[in-house]
Length: 117
Image (cartoon, rainbow, N blue to C red; front, side, top):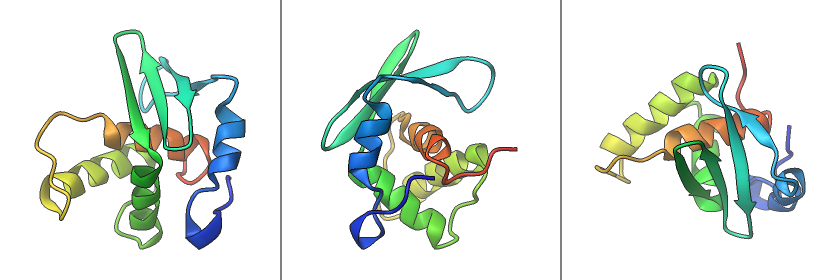
């Protein structure tokens, strides 16, 4: 597991080191892989064959707070669905289609914060 940095946030230097080689990560379901395309000071960008999207460091930290507070489950798929529900009804309502919850689940699983079955 990537250890928290200052203030309980994800240690972003370790994240940058871990993903510098652009590895592929397990997706939430099936055998397809998600490739790390880029990681910088503010976000990590992932892609599959038909899409490319990014999630910010702040969004990952916010998702981790919800997990640590017990407001989201620790299994990857349930975490993504819980985060999607939070975004649809909580203080940060997002009405458009977003891969953010899935990207957060993929990255946090790879970092060891979520449990795999």
